[in-house]
Length: 161
Image (cartoon, rainbow, N blue to C red; front, top):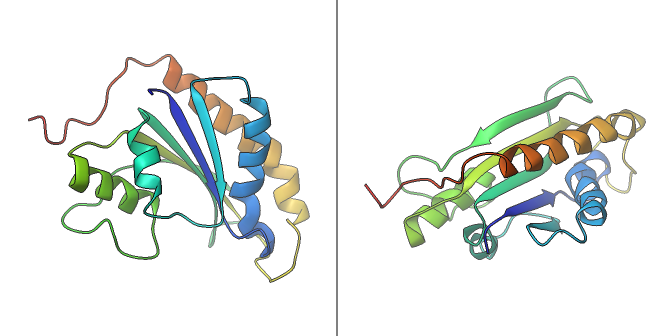
């Protein structure tokens, strides 16, 4: 089943930590009739997601981040971690790709889009800053999916050298 897997994750009861889940829900509605795109909203990354990842040729991770100016959106390429690993908690996009490589000798192309949050307090809603930046965050996710669709199909070559 080639195509794209979008995983938006974060704790929905901790304010801006829910940025990834919120975006995933919006994107799930947007791509609801697209057989090449699957969207998962989850509280955290889990080892069971390795199977979902392996079924796709592109994975897009959506999450909140800390440290930058609130509302800052960053896109980064995700690669497997060098050396042993992949099953260390907490799971990260890189550790899931590492697990895929270790178990099956291959990992899909992957990207992460993060938005710096403002408030991560228990019981809080997404901040006004995050709400204002959410359309840009979602637009970048849609652009990443479309960009991948128009790219020549290629998976990592781990295990095939």
